Image (tube, rainbow, N blue to C red; front, side, top):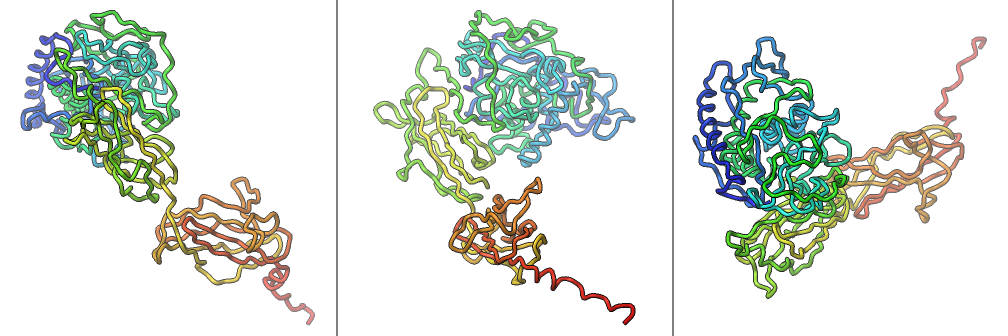
Length: 582
């Protein structure tokens, strides 16, 4: 996913130049002081803050072509009768967003508000990008679950008027085994989707052709690097990282302002589709409806392979086997880029490639990789992508499972701090060179459970009941080195004897969700004060003295005595009332 600074992908500068001039006029006509218009999120780039450099971690679309149509000069104004949360525009059809597509944008904003509150992602930004990239999924031609009725596929990125990005998905998404093509309503290239994809509609897979999945992926993509989109600089950086063009930046910002001033939902399939694209400036009324057909005719015939069904993915954005690294073209004249000189990656860490941390803690060691040539020389200023994979909730600092870092003068890329989640597990972290196939280096990380070295019962009241009766609830407290041990897992077992800690087959028991007797409980967790209260205990019909043992990782253990006796029933029974005749 190379960044191509200072160049357009199709030599149709007339269209984008005109668009840029129109943006300036639009910005002036929609100034913040306009009556009835809320303060816009952002003015056009460059008016107050210089356009920032794009981070060297590629872009989402491969700088594919996009629609250049501008919003109407007369911004929509909220109707006096519109209800809160459902603004209705007056007179401007462009303000309408297909209902399912709008719902996808707003749900993505809500999820990002919870997952990354510091990002301050507005749904209007997703709507603006969706408008420019695909005309809101071709005017909302989506099914009820948000999947496009036919795939939205851009032209092949074969370097002939477009960026050069050779195939990275074996044609699984775009039907092309020679070159990549942007896919879906948010126009991700396959190599970006391989690590950025998300499951936004809860069906267990990440599908770039589903507007819920694509909108959520776009939101996370725009919120990476710790960006705060309420600030002008970070907003501009995020948009430019999606498609590295100042014209694109200005166009997206103009749509953001337009949608901020009023919009409403329209039925799916009834939305309008922009007419002009940045690749050749020719008017277009729609995008192709035939699966696998490019959205604009490439100058070089495509050689697609037989389309394959996109692979099913876990809800996690990062597949257990990271996708192929995104290609990076050589410099003009065929001179190899620094990435081309890399033979392999090595670990510069003398302590090895295995790491361990306790749940909830940060790993003490930082993961790194050094890029070297065949003769062992370090290679500086190349990009290395680190990817967490496996059944884990561990992340890099900032909540991401993927991080792209440039190597320093010694050829070393140092990944962000690795943070253990609450889940005890072993997982992998891989590293690859972005833009070049080279042997990477992997790490194995293990998250161990939170420990407790001591358990005590919080009450000394004897626990007794009659056969078939109920005990009072048992509560224990866990500590580690004298301090309360919070979020520690615990196991409770009705054991056969102090010398035999296996589960008993008779005596007191817990009940499972179906009301059936169980004598071992797992998944118990202490609260912030180190306390855990066990579920209610029941006695069967066998009298006797029984033992309950509670244990925690780290060696904490406590054994509680339970007595089942008919005497307990007698002592609990009230005295008989005096006879009426006495």
